[in-house]
Length: 121
Picture 1 (cartoon, one colour):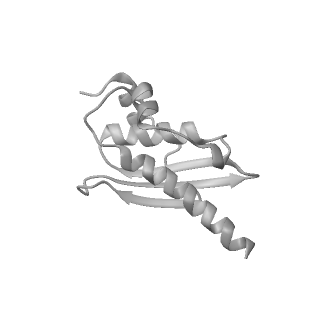
Picture 2: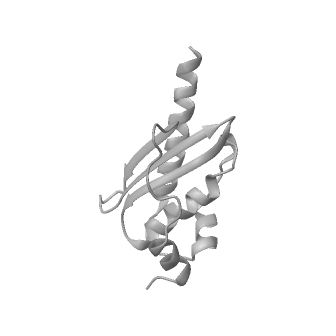
C-alpha cells in the first residue's frame, strides 16, 4: 500500500518532536479529524534553523510532515515555497489529503511573522 520512500520516513522520521520555546508554532487537524499535526520552528537571522513536527496520523501523513521539515530547514523564512506537487514528486502519488500538513507549516511561519511584528511595537 505504501511505497518504500513513505515507509522509510514513517519508520525513521526525520525531525520528529517539538522545539522547546519555538519561534513559530501551528497545530491543525484534517477536515475529518482523523489526523493531527503540529509544526514548531526555530528561526535565526531570518533562516529556518530548526523545524520539527508531531503527528497522529497514517504513515503517508507522517512521511509528508517529515519531508516538509527537510525541505524547510535552511531556507529563509520568507522563501519557503513547498507545494503539493513537490511532495508528490518526492514521495509518490496518493489518495490522502495532506494539504493540511502544508497549511500547518505555513501557519507556523505566519505565527513567527506575527510574533516578530508584535515585538517591533
